[in-house]
Amino acid sequence: MRGLPKLKVNFEYERKKKEKAVKIPKAHVYNLGRVRKIVAFVLIGLFLYFGYVLFLANAVAQKNRVLRHSVTSLTKKLDEASAGTTSYNPIVGQYLANFVTAYYTFDKDKADDWLKQVTPYFAKNVTISNATNTDNMKLIQAKLNGIFTVDSIKTAQYNLTIETNGKQVTMIVNVPYTQDNDKLTVIGLPYVANEIDSVGQVGKARFDKTGRTLNDEAVTNKVQKFTKQFVQKYVSSSTKDMSLLMSDPVGLDNAVELVSLEDSDIKVTGSTKKPIVTAKITVKLQGTNITQVQTIYLELKKQASTYFVTKFLQA
Image (cartoon, rainbow, N blue to C red; front, side, top):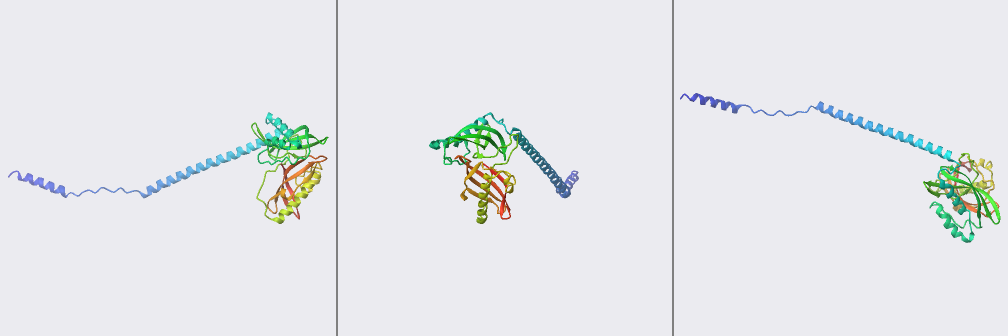
């Protein structure tokens, strides 16, 4: 009987243990203010990062613009310093001498052979024909006046002496060409020109633009008519006389005569107020039967009932 109290104590302990409240784990609660601060810091960091990247990109672009300007300036100075020389490459002089010899030596009985010989010198998009020459001619002498940069195109100018029908005649021609290391290509038909000052004076004479044909028939007809009148005046007048028609006047003063210029040879592009003309003309060296085809490029400006030539190029 003495053991009963002990059992009672144990029973009371077990009962209290069972009645003890079960503790529920405390839920994890996010601090909204803290989350907002973290997001704000991340956004600010991204903004600063992309701003820095944009700053670097602009700096690189600015540096590239400065470098391009420097390259352009140096190239221009090099061209001016090299004007009148063949120092670009030792083979330039020989290549051009071979070309003018082949081009201005013509046997009408071997016209096809002439065409085969001169074709490899020209760029693929330059059209040449052996039907232009009608008489035999032989190059007697070719004097290189200089190699110049004409409207950004390397151009060799020659003073030629040619024999035809027992007579010797002289003329000045420009030969536009391009060079890639030791590879050279004539990129335009040789054309009769005024002599360029060999002391680095560079003229502007090179057409390099085409465009969509102007669809206004009335304007096209008027421009074609003006072009014919202009070309006739150009071949027959002095440079001084051409000042009324051109911003940079030039005239051949009867060095050649115009053989043909048809409407079909004249392409009119640009706008009604500022038409652009590209045309092929056939000229003959004065006092001879030597003819050749030349391409001209005109930028015109409407002036009352006629036009004024703001830019004149040849190729």
